[in-house]
Length: 160
Figure 1 (cartoon, rainbow, N blue to C red):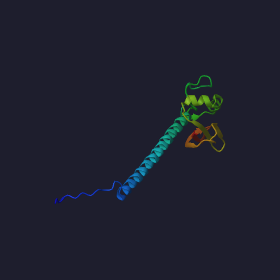
Figure 2 (cartoon, helix red, strand yellow):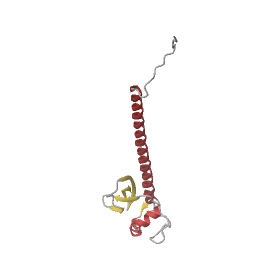
Figure 3 (cartoon, rainbow, N blue to C red):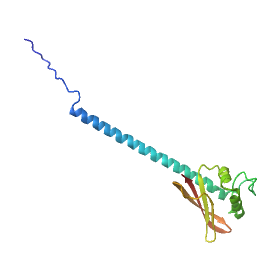
Figure 4 (cartoon, rainbow, N blue to C red):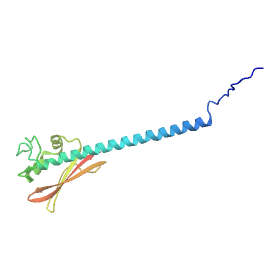
């Protein structure tokens, strides 16, 4: 008679423990994947918003430079600027309106639509697109001098 010193047990291929561990692993993997996707979306939104803020400041710079040529008009303007003698020039604001939105967009090198508003007690001037129907709006406020009065300049960059 032969004695088998090493008894072998046959294991089950799919035990209950294996099923639980695979389920937990898949659950953790799914949560991790959804969290990575959520964080990627948030990072992209923040990047886009930062680009829009940079563009808003770039557009607002037209209030603090003269432009080129200094006494530009609708036909010879190369660089937009609304300032004369360190003050916002009312005549250049009129020229900007006459220039038109599309040409100003090209001259500014803007990648987004925009709206500019100048307000004080006596002045309420606006130029650009209406803010309706835009899903993302970034707004910056600056101060300037127009007609010897301090005015609030609001620049909004718009994205659909």
